[in-house]
Length: 236
Image (cartoon, rainbow, N blue to C red; front, side, top):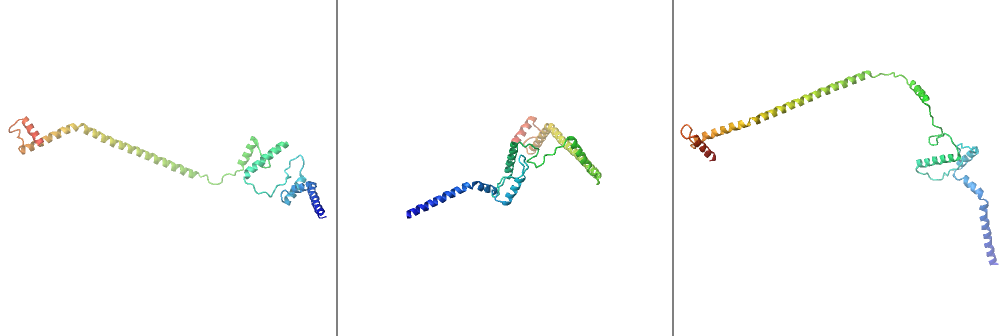
């Protein structure tokens, strides 16, 4: 009996477990629906999505939010890349549905305004006509002062330029005079050397006569003897 009780107990748990396993399978559609309805984790968001579904029209993309968003996820970084990816997905989805309109998904909800050349000219003329006339001073006296100031500056610069040119010519004249004087001295250098040589020989001759190393030309001796005596004196 104990074994039968154990077997009965085992069969009881087995039957219960099979019943428990069958129960979720039979209730799986409702559970899935509840799971889909509460996928966002916010009852307020789910209520809003249900309302958007109720007013949506089949065959037309009116912009309603008909899919729940998972609000439990953490924030994803790289918002610009994620936004561009979503824009591409939306463009592809609209192209597959065959929806063709001029709404710019990237630039806003309204199409870009384009004006013709005539309309553009009319709008520009209207805008310029709306500009009020200038009521303040024109600044003409200031312009005249600036004009005279720059004229004086140009006159001053011209004066300084002429002064620099004159200084340059004076410097060149001085250099030219110095060079001409040097050339003149170089040309007369030979005569100067000869006069200096004669003067030194005369002084040496007088010194030799005074000291008895040579005799005077007026007394005795010739020119050759005098020259020999002078050479001996120079060597001494």
